[in-house]
Amino acid sequence: MTAPTFDNSYARLGAGFFARTPPVPVADPGPIAVNGELATRLGLDPEWLKSPAGVAALAGNLVPPGADPIAQAYAGHQFGGLSPQLGDGRAVLLGEVVAPDGARFDIQLKGSGPTPFSRRGDGRAWLGPVLREYLVSEFMHAAGVPTTRALAAVTTGEQVVRESPLPGAVLTRVASSHIRVGTFEFFAIRGDNERLQALTDHVIARHYPDAGDAMGMLRAVVSRQAETVAHWMALGFVHGVMNTDNMAVSGETIDYGPCAFMDAYHPDTVFSSIDRGGRYAWSEQPRVAVWNLAQLASCLIPIMGDEQTAVAEATEIVHGFPELYQAAWLRRFAAKLGLAAPEPSDRALVERLLDLMAAQKADFTRVFRGLATGDAAAEFADPAPFEAWRADWQARDPDCALALRVNPVRIPRNHRIQQVIEAGVHGDFEPFAALGEALRLPFEDRPEWADLSLPPREGEEVRVTFCGT
Image 1 (cartoon, rainbow, N blue to C red):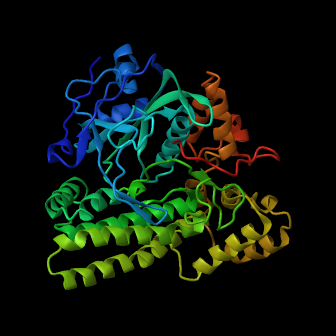
Image 2: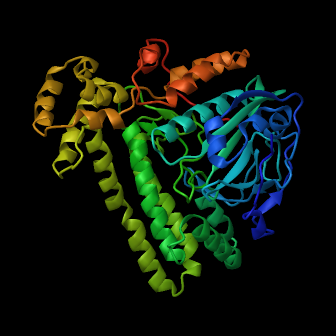
Image 3: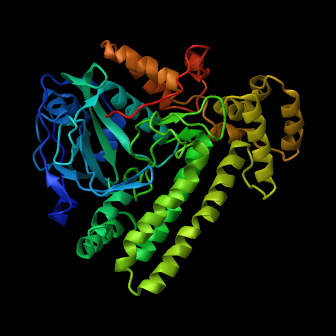
């Protein structure tokens, strides 16, 4: 059994980008889960991760040889207001590993103790958010969404205090990087153009080797975010806290805090307890993405050459997001209808269906899955309007096999995650393991998982989600 081998390119950027911060040991680490498939993808030894030394490393009690633990610095616009210094307040980046295929990945511990960026926080995570992020991020990967992933989860043998004492846990998160729009803001608002250029060069080398310069990088980030957000929308996913410090420039979905998936469809759906104005509602996510990308563009202007020319070109790139997004949206939703070659008129067909679903509070996931299985009408209290729509849809000669491939039969429904968390708090992780196994195969319809595709019964609904801090 062998420990990981690290190569830490971000740490080599030097002072100002991070604070060197070892994880704080915990009292009594214990395993919850190790993601063997992901470990193999990274070229890691799953058996070592499960060993006492591996569990100690996953909890922060042992720093593996070659790791260089750091807390990354970044700023961020939170609900539109700028916080000039945020940073990793309860996480440390152990380092980077290079997979057998040459791809580079960060390995980060979330809940590993306070850092210089903790802002009076305890730096710990309680069990609930760890289980939620593990399940949701792995589902997103299985559904094909660019995302951070969960390598492992461990208990700490300690309690953390939120509204009440709760069991602590640590999540090991994997990402192609943890560089955010807010990372660029951190240097831009300080006028530190030298580090801003170094960060840009690092991102280009790591994520966009064909970009060439800052303008090319901006263009690539805009394109990737358009695809990612369109994929969110097609799954009924509500991120919940799309602050600029929660938007990764790699295009990966990051920071699964108060996230959730819609049961009954409504475009204005909000789950997050702190989003009282609906800024990050499902329907607002594309507009927020544009706003965030505009902040990134503003950061890059000082290193783009002539200011007037740079502003004009960067503005054009950001303003190109809606066209890219709408094309991706139509592609995604047309596929959900079984239409591999969408026509412009198919947008109205999709929107008519969404309007019917909103009017009757039909289940988002079950309606789209039901189109392929012939069960969609059962999701409507009054099926007559749907039947009229279905006649127009069938006239388009849909491919139901395609619809089955892109419409999951099950999602990480809020009430199911809540049940997993409640069991885990009492030391029972079997429901977590069972739900995780089913979510890794979201398009397979198996009888033993039939109940996991059902919407919540009366009294089971979970309409509000919370950040883990």
